[in-house]
Amino acid sequence: MLIKFYKSIHNKYSKIFKFFFYLTHLVVIFVISFGLFLSIPKFYDQAKKKEIIKNFLMINYGLELKRYDTIDYRIFPYPNFFFKNIQLKIKDTPILFTSKNFNIFLDLSSIYNTEVIQKKKISFNDLIIFSDIDRVNDLLSHLIISKNKFSIKKSSLNLLKENKTILTIKDIKYSNFGLKKNQISGKIFDKEFDVSIKNSNKIINFKILKTGINALIILDDTKNKKLISGSSKINILDNFLKFDFDFVNGELRLKDSSFRNKDFSAFLNGILTLKPFFKIDTVININKLNYKVLEEINLEKISLYKNFIIKINGNNKINYKIKRFNRNIINNIFLDTNLEFGRLEIESEIAIPGGNTTCKSETLITEEYPRLYFDCNFSIQNKKKLFDKISIKNKFSNDPFILKISGNLNILNNKVNFKNIKIDNSYVANDEDLKYFKDTFEKILFNENFLKIFKSDKIKDFLLEIM
Image (cartoon, rainbow, N blue to C red; front, side):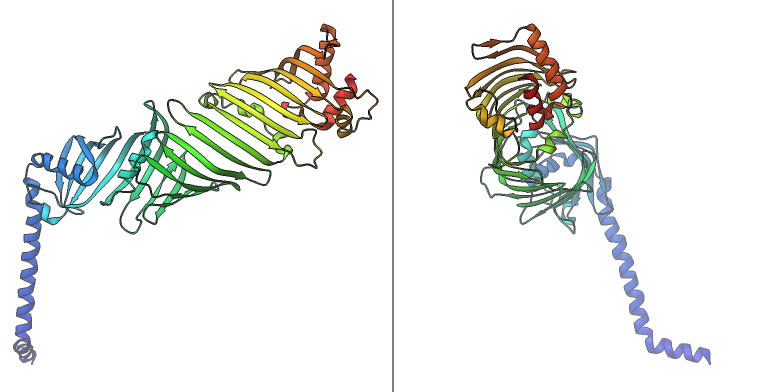
């Protein structure tokens, strides 16, 4: 019975079985043939393709092949040339790429082509990029703006200044194709960050994760390859910075800039220069300032960053016009500051009720106990206005006078030394007077930190003590 059933099935479906077995043979033959097709190039001397590979990298990626340790042909995950310890350079720049593992993934038509490589994509693993800070635009042109496929994994970028590394970005991962096209991740200052690039590489969103820092950068279309320009909005823990910028030849120009938070707001323009040394020149107009924030600044903590401060240079002009109705003794402030290699020079003009003050001062911030040397003139035209402001009954003549004071302040130790005190031509303080003013100043004005010297109640108590 079973034999008859088998014969019936076999006779009825024999053609189908024969076709199935025939197809199976074809698949096996195809797999073996395709495997041989992919494998045979592995036995070739790949070093002979060095010139072809050099031309491929130069034409498609603008990269000069400088050296490599070994080159191998690999089948998986897709036919590719695998390089060990390769070094490349961006054409016409000093920007160097060094990678422990570098792959050129091949189009199948390139496997046996001895004259040209059909582009597929390239991949860097453990890549290290060395670039001068002022050549960042050249770097972006060859990475983000490139139309040819490439990817980067577990890589780092070293930004240099005079052959010294000033910033390292680690664990970079980027691809200009695929599901995560134009998304960059990595670590900066040991903090993880994400960058997304949209609208043909013109809109850049930057976030440092778990820090509250994010930025939106919109780049302009420009035909000048050496110029990067655009606008930016930055949020740092609810501190908002907005500005337009131009970056060219290692110089960043800030225009129509504003900064604001709940205690402070200002408009500024300036230039940040990266060569031949780091320099910041700005003009800052302050329109809101909470004095309590200034009083809480810890100067001792700032002094811990001496090695960083000595690298900052620049001239900064600061204007602050106080609102008409305020309880402070200061009406307007203008500061012209110049910082070079840790030496800070300040020229100030301060408007107060009934007069104004002008001072020239300087200090070396990098000293262990920095001293502020000062030479100040207090020109008082109306004593009544000054005394009314600080609630002192005016029992004195209202004659104008000019008070000249010079000396120095030990900023961290809360000590003062007066060199000269003079009122017009009628009074010159002797040594005993200078000692008295020193003790009174330290007891009343300088009994806390330097930034609290200008509190109205302290000035009132000081004046009542010495008059």
